[in-house]
Length: 524
View 1 (cartoon, helix red, strand yellow):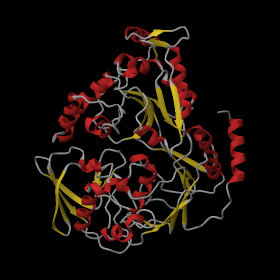
View 2: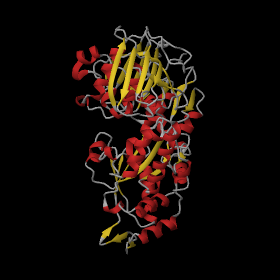
View 3: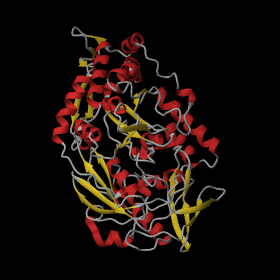
């Protein structure tokens, strides 16, 4: 995008953003998307997750390295030799925003609710295959599994495994997470005006921040105001104009411009694992042949996409798992080698011949797969770019964009060959178990990939009690699915926090697109 175009957009947007006087004790944040509710057990939606992590806590926290679980509500833990029993020793100085004292009973209730079919918790698997939770005393929890779960501690850092107050859940019923919700976090839920603003207030009793922060609590601000501003240029203009203190949703196209602003600082979350990929529904005839999938994977120029669309603020992705992630398999590098001529040969071998119009045909059918994407961010432009690359090898991508409010429903109809999302993950095992286990057909395993070797490898990795065994099992699965070309990895998407230079102590966190996390060290 040209600088003149950017400048014009910013000037126009500045006129549309209301000027507000600074509020000395209020931290002002903005986001692009709101959520349907803020009950973390009932969603996978990242716009819910970052807010949930502000007012609720988990048994363990995730350190800055994105790999290491550290003490939080649980001050220590032990694991049995067979990997099935975790004994957590809880802090005895924690209380909810309501003033209720936190005990082991709250942990037992929270996980019972998570596993209750009535909750319909889409991420309940992150808590492992629970056999029973017991509380031998008010500050001890025995967390027993039916089988070992090698990444349990890592998964317990996730917002879906946060601790809830039974009294709050029962008091608010269907309005829980909408009109009110209780938590032990550094912020307390005050109000929510959908699509407009979420307001949190300081939890004055909070003193139990994890060791990754210098300040263990309370936070330095009386309130946190989070405004919902969908328009990209309006968010950029508002930050440049000093109307907000922090955001993690400056569009990639504007990052270089914002970096040059003297009043702002831009920090990248490192590490950060977010993959934009296109998945193949392998049970659809057009993409059932591995050679067709491989041809598409090697026909695109990822470096050009990064340069032309992401303006250099991303990285080309040739593997499903980032090489900095836990249990990345190094031997998956080189499986995807961009080669336009080889792509054409693969399609020839698969029986797809070029027709008079330049589009390949087989048995009277055009090679014209339906490709679904959501009409947000970079998805439309990347899809259009890949559509152009596909034409070079005789494939007519029929790209179809949908508004974010209806895209999930359209995907649920299953009437497409490919789809695209950006998936945030924490480790190889996190990504692999979520997407490639046959138990997750038809979603999130939209590939309809049902393979005994994959399932066996995933189970071996999940149930390993030795790190090396886990890594070996997950490496075999990574190689298997990469050689089958079940996905087209395109780019690794960076995540930035943009903040006022007046705001001190800012450091972006990588957890599930959640750069703010707790905000304990922030101050003016």
